[in-house]
Length: 88
Image (cartoon, rainbow, N blue to C red; front, side, top):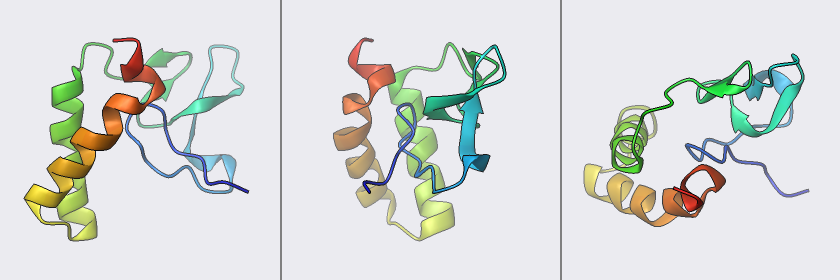
């Protein structure tokens, strides 16, 4: 089974429902994590792609030991291809 990633920030969603965001009816979102999406709406509706790239890259450096350059490059390559940003 292919691992599912958040279609907003690229975070791995894992095999349990705990990382999934929620729809307005309380069901789990099939596309977005709980950090990006809650109760049927984005938690940061006005964030730009560039701001999301900076935020995710900073987490990759802090939590996963990426160099700032590698983190930023990976985010610039991957995030624009996610569902939230393809239509932006």
